[in-house]
Image (cartoon, rainbow, N blue to C red):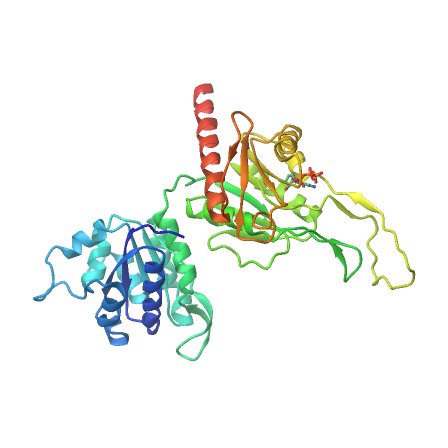
Length: 406
Ligand code: CTP
């Protein structure tokens, strides 16, 4: 992730998790952001401003009044930065922002802020469950602020429950949504990823080498760019991307059911999963025993999910993927025609640094209309961004056509 010199105001309020904000400041800076910290008085009871000043290289703002304070800072700060992240956000701070109270520098900045805001609550589990706190959070969400769910685990008070500040990496991931151009805002995007598992018996299955990385990168980047994303994933070892609704499936037929259920509601389908083309004709209920020197299995073709749903298209942009070992472009074009796709992403899986398992990919984007666009070797997130650029253009031209028809 590259925040590319963007300016983030990091508000720190008075909870025990305030010390974790120091790590968060480091991560944000590590991603290329410039961070200005504003601390409430109670935050300073938990951690000193000097820590943040040393980490960020910027003076920490702590008070509205006093010899060192700028009289207009409370207005300027929330408007000059690119985004505001408050971590940890206490129940008291959330209540004040919900109620429009500005009785210190940070809450006053929030009143005057014009930039996108991420609130990362952290508190005791009972406080979190309190309907007043939940009501206040609902008001903040209603005003368009992005609110993270706290993590579950053991809390500073000794209890176990919901209330921990989410891990810094997750907060950085959520903050990325504030900093990206929201060119997919309001769009429903369905992504499939990973391999499928087709059972022979209770312990053995037929699968392929897909890791799911390209599909997960697509889901992540689409969410950052403002989309509502559903990820239908076969079995992988990857963590669920933040903000994305994840649906876990196992076999091609499970995936088919989920894709068919979601497809009518979406604007875009990105079918990155490596769907198994065949499944064992017979699934044994009991483990198959070693009994012979040779064994033969019958396989039955799985449904072609993409082909089936593309035939039900009512304005959706449908993107397919073609992993090939030879005749890359010709094969990809054939699949695009046969499966009625708007765009196909072709990759040569012979290369060790591209395709399955690895973090990089070299693909060619082939639109239905127009020339193929060969891309250099890129990270899977960069590839995702290029694919989504094309999807945005296709959505815009679809919307333009609808407007003309109306
Ligand atoms: N696909 C699908 N259902 C299947 C097989 C593939 O939806 N049963 C989708 C994949 O997710 C991918 C595209 O179709 O987006 C092309 O997949 P690929 O396996 O390359 O194509 P196949 O049509 O199976 O052709 P082949 O395996 O013979 O190359």
